Amino acid sequence: MSIVRTAIPLVLLTSVLTGCAGLQKTDWPKCAAVGGVSGAALGAIESSSWAGWGALLGGGLAAGYCWSHGDGDEDGDGVPDSRDKCPGTPRGVQVDANGCPPEPVAVVEEVVVQKEEVIVIRDVHFEFDSARLTASDKERLNTIATRLKQEAPSARLSVSGHTDSVGSDSYNQKLSERRAHSVTDYLVDNGVPRSSFVSVVGAGETQPVADNATAEGRAMNRRTEIKIQR
Image 1 (tube, rainbow, N blue to C red):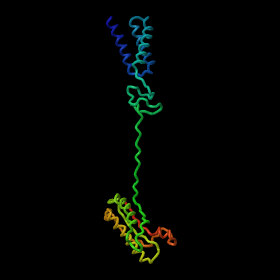
Image 2 (cartoon, rainbow, N blue to C red):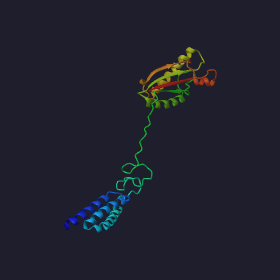
Image 3 (cartoon, helix red, strand yellow):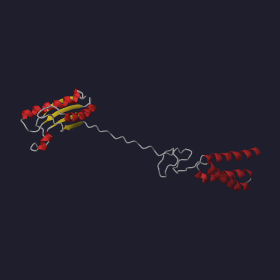
Image 4 (cartoon, rainbow, N blue to C red):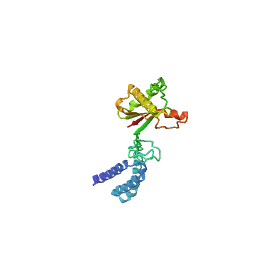
């Protein structure tokens, strides 16, 4: 019987302390209550008069053990320090089961590819009454060639030449064709695949974009356009 009396208190005390070890420091009232009940039961085994002292002693021991060995929560995020992989999280920040703020979801912006684009070249003036390119014309076209080489070979390029209304319709038509081909040939010579060009045409004076009655308007109408279709 003495062995039973000795073993039962040890088993109960061990069970109480083991249960408290898995709790947080702030759970000491719960530990004290459980310890008090267990202490009372332990005391009653010896004598009914020992029940009160057992409750007091058991509750105190359990509460103290819980406070000293229990898990803390320094940053107050609701995750015990033993499992908190992100200590020091500011209060009010939502955290996951590991005590860490959720990873921000990367927002991937959709890249909208413009299916069609037109490059308008107005500062290529050619030699007077000619389709021959000047040095400044070639410098301008070098920049455009670099851009178009990045588009090739998937893009389809259409080149059209345009003039103002000075001169006859037939003359302007032929001049616009020669200038469109001159620009195309220069771009090809500088690395743009000829296979990328699906059409090279002259529109003469038929597609003005400004008033031919003014010098400014005529300058705008004298242009070469390159349409990029992706």
